[in-house]
Image (tube, rainbow, N blue to C red; front, top):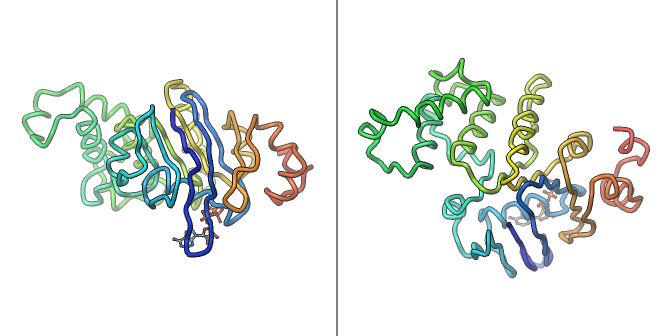
Length: 253
Ligand SMILES: Nc1ncnc2c1ncn2[C@@H]1O[C@H](COP(=O)(O)OP(=O)(O)OP(=O)(O)O)[C@@H](O)[C@H]1O
């Protein structure tokens, strides 16, 4: 279980995330919503280790991660999508996924020896490429992929690393209309693995409604609502003050 306790960060005099205590269970997709500047991305950054907390803690399965840098948190099982840090632009799509599969398998750096007798890893990488609909582009250089395909590749790399927690920050931002369903389908597939914890920052309420098991709402850096999607979305205070949407619209979406 992923847990934040009194997690806080101050930028000068501004408290961007203010004593947020929340636990995220495996088998649950939690959407984090709130108006612009509410602290959603900052909360993500605190969990994944991109920024350091002023106070409070982040633990995963009881292990204290608060002082660890981002790469060590990744190794501990926190998988944040779209950070581009896992991507090797000059390598092919297939090589990128294979590297991640190999890293996960703990095969170390002896690349050639390992690959010559690890057909299982090669097949696993290709299965992931099929899942993320990139098998036809397996030989393309990662850098040459259009934006949507790069995002799919990043999800593929993340799947290969097999984290305990998947974190998606606006996964469909900047995607073309026909690419959006592919990414949403991938998240749906991840949800089927009940051992995974998924966190999603998303502005689009239709996506939130469809995917989430639970919604938490941040406002001015504070956790102001937490519950089942229908009740959180329907609560007038969230609709009007925090989401800035017309209640009729959100409920009908
Ligand atoms: N590195 C930083 N230095 C100073 N202030 C920051 C920094 N990062 C974020 N902030 C401030 O913290 C607050 C929260 O920002 P954050 O990006 O987390 O909000 P958000 O909920 O993700 O917003 P959006 O929906 O617009 O992405 C904002 O007021 C922002 O200006």
